Image (cartoon, rainbow, N blue to C red; front, side, top):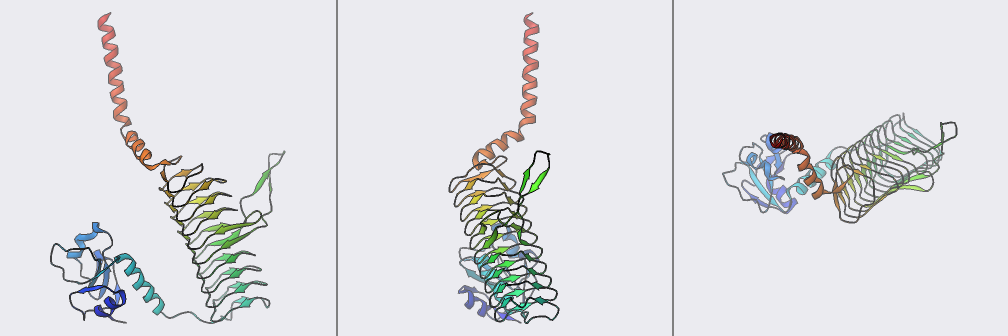
Length: 346
């Protein structure tokens, strides 16, 4: 389907500069733009491509002032990245939607299935599960006994939701993710082996949560592991038993939170971050990539490092670290000079 620049500008409430009748039918990165596509400038380090791209339409921020002639039609908006995301969402909604219960799926007779639900091939919905309206369950998804899934959720192929888990509305779980697996609970014995502690709790995930591929959210030992509304998790993330993760938290790939940690709202976590168990991380905290957080963190702090410290101190320390070889040479030279002075005096 083709879209005119004028229609796109009207939808985004943006200012159009250029040909209002130019049409696009796809999107592209600004550096790889081709005729008939729409691209956007969200980061000024890519500005040079504005003057080179062959894309037909460019979304830019309202404060962007070109320094050279631009061949593409511009649409100026408040936030180019957000506007681009809105267009992608509109495009996604326009694609054909999966419908119906496929004959190769297995649904227990006591399960409750809402309206307009899609259940793909080889998916299993167990006893007493409750599936809300407009839920999409792709092939090879497993939903355990008594699971509750709110309306509008999407479970991509291969997702597993263990028994008793409670999922809010409009959540998205990507392939390979497991909700409600056992927490890592083992008690050491006098024989130097480990006895498994039964994990009898559940997982509660609130509304508008998106979890990437191959993540694990463990059930609580007792009570609940809780993911609050609006949380966004990247791929390959581990959330351990009895963790509470606050509203609108975002976490990048390969990060993990150990058992019983309490995490505040609006936090931002970089990739490969490890957060220790039984600690409290406050609201609005930012944690740099590859950090190890082993103690409580106050509201609003920005930390990085192993162990994590204030990011300004981390970068000062990092600067010193890079100069260690030079400093060592200087110290060796000072030692030689002192030795020469002593020998001269003798």
